[in-house]
Image (tube, one colour):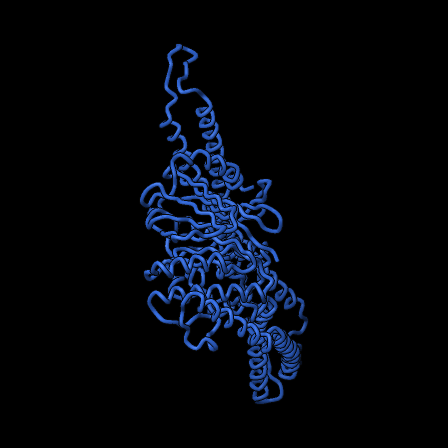
Length: 564
């Protein structure tokens, strides 16, 4: 089964002129640091670089406007997930931009899901089927200090906005409901919407036929005045549509002009940005003292001036991204106007066809009189029969989707999964000194245990029981286990070392494990690499790493800004 292994994390703030490189290429890594020294920033940035939204982000960190890059191994290759300039991008080992997206729901999320073969599909509150956000893919592997030690399935609670997220996550990642079940459920949701529309249409046609049958007389009559009035109505509608056509054409013309101006602005900014980078590189390559070729006077090649160039570059980069974002917005509006114009053109063509038919009618009064109630009933009957056939086909599709869901909801398999999960949970609880309430009845969506310091240990027992269950019963990608600050609710000198040894010693399927904590146990942790970060309080980034990390980001920024 495919696994993801994190290799390196790079963080860069052009606002603060600070950066950080975090080596991650260890099977077991413990990041140590006191409160406020930035270890949680590192932990939150790991899955944020892949498109997940952390529960809490410090205001100071927000103001730093840091770009992030996560280097990872997957499917035998090295990849780089970059979050910078308002977009997410995936690069391959050769620096090629594989795909990118500004919007998590419509762009980045579906592309990342396809990349990792994540097939979960869910319906939003309007019944529309969609691929959920990337956080749904990483959910079992991340334990956040802000919420995850209170209850499960809230590690990315801002992203878990779809109905019944907790239940869906537990069912999907445990294997109780595999990929096929959710594909069938998505089909069912969509087909039920189609079926509801068809059933409404059938009922409407039946009511209309009853009303026609209730009309007195054998044949309704029509006169030429009515015919003339119908033509006048069509001509009036046509004139209104022509007015709308002119208006939309003008708006479309304005949008094209605005798009042209924004493209020109973006190109100018891009040229200025590359020119400024050339000046910075030239200034960096020159010696500290430079002789004027005209007068021979020596001048200082000031480091402050170089940083001013970097700051100006940041301003230009931000302006370029804003211009590109505005351009995308205008292009989207232009597309919408084109669709409206096409609809108007179609309506005009329809009216013209109707008028042409009316002009060619030799004896319209005779035709209409002959049609009458009988002909109208025939036409409605044909339409009703078509709708009934379509409704029957839709019902069959609904039944097929329900049947398919049933195939993926084998009760025997579900019972087996629950039994093994509860066995894992009981074993973990015993090892972590946790007393469970009714261990044989514990649900797979949560855990019920005592409060106080026992609560976090019960949750840890639950998370690992779930992970072992996932590994045994699913074929999905395994991501690194990332655990932030397990020392919750005042764990004593016995239980905190117990938790850390359990975390690193009970990992299923040799999944990479990264933990952040304030304290180390007195006894060593075998096979665990320990790293310390944070130069000062609330300052995890380092000035002395800025140039090196900035150089690392440079090729990615060039591809992002040139939209390659």
